[in-house]
Image (cartoon, rainbow, N blue to C red):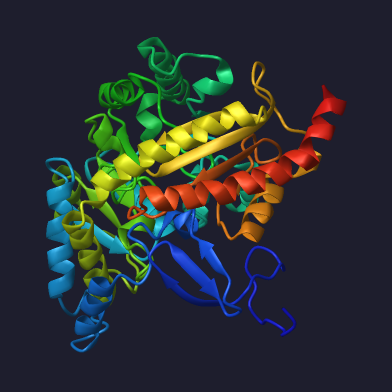
Length: 449
């Protein structure tokens, strides 16, 4: 890569120029093919360049590409909102479209606060979240995020929000299938509500199935139900951040659907638009929205909210998911991929945990499975293995597991159209990368033992 780039994002590292993407595959301008093993950032749920979604977008482009929400209602927006209301729990009838996950979370906490003010609960403003967690990059969403490298530089600019530990039973040596484990972590929420003062706590936000910060963390038995009961007991609103787990990736439209637990507000994005257009949504219960609208309206908005082109894309994505049985395939392919990842634990002693639901899966590297001690942080395994996989033509996604400074987990989340044969291909690439990684890491592990 010799040409100068005027773009900048997180780092100054360069990547090949993308030429084409179809299905689960992507090609650079030099003709090298990659498997999109993480669906980008867990976005491209239905694969790339789906012809029916592209056709729907072309048809909408010929009609209109923008209509400001205060000037016009649009057919794609109304149809998509109705579709979403039909896929979410009873009473979740109101949909507010946005362009991404951070906007969806920001909208959720602002609606929660405005509702509280409207019904005379002005003292409620604190939103409890978990650590580690990631809820977005805007200052409001970042205040909910429990990931020090991302939050620390901006702390003077934010209103600190209370945190409780995420239910990482595998690190605490607890049985994920024991309801007592779920209650153990849920009780941390109740204690925090009482400590802060129940009349000051507005909401609790969490991911039903973990995203990047916890690496596809599945809650222990009983946790989801206990959290709902605790929120109800103290008049605290429950917000589900389904930005990564929503849209069918876990085998259900919403991650929380696996437990039959309904929140008060949902934030969704990423796979919801599947990468075809910037799209997300806040979905809220009628009982919250109606008082706010009757008291003068929701004091919040984004210019591209309800953009007709984005909504046309989102509607076509949902229709493709249903017509293609993609949620069912996410379950089948996810079960197969998870079993293959579990098989790797027999081959590599440094794989300490495999977790997830459907095609939202991750594995974590450790120095020792008994203690779950992380790999030495100077190995930079979270970036090293990603680069080795990239050289093989496999894209995976990593994050530091513990406080953002050590620990290494990797998300393996190919699109929901992935076949068994493609999983074989993916695993061959991943195994080759792990073999090369093992050659580098095992001497260091022997020295640190």
